[in-house]
Length: 278
Image (cartoon, rainbow, N blue to C red; front, side):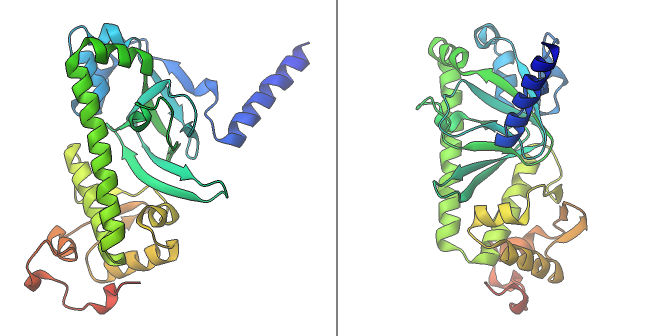
């Protein structure tokens, strides 16, 4: 009997790994009365805002943290939306999968971001959420959140604001893909990451790029080889410095922004050849 149970448990874990789902062992309940007080991202996190709002914490209920390894899937497209998540540490990518197996990276999400809300109205997850690195997310019960939104208009407005921000970012990415060349797309991507890190109170000039060149290429509509060549050209032109593995440094934001026409022509890179569009 013991051997049979052990085999069933092993089979369940192997199946979870095969489909990219985090096994139950990575989920733990926080025993702190107010876990957000210990979290660095509490200043910008929707979950923390809920818990700081008198009365809302009782409606939302107990918080749990989900830990995932790199490549594990937090939720899958098409499944019933029963939870939404606030990223506590690490990062995730949202991925859409075509019937023929092709994948499209829709976005990248970092500490303090909420994921899963794009499917809130339809009550299903609209894409996969996959850990880009070892990550942790705080889960919020969707039914409890819905009840809180009905009871407290301020919660409903916060949800609407987050969904609107997500839609705005998606529309912005369509503009980037439809109107910019390769070098401009990558410059916009790096500047956007820089701005997002600054919004979190982190360095806007040096930060980690945990995603692969392939994922960046999928997001920007380019081949991974093109992304690698553009990174090399940016570095040769002095626009960025790859200080160590996964770390990128932007010594001069003005020069990088000049590629997007945000600055006068006199600030543009003199030699255009290294940055010619692919």
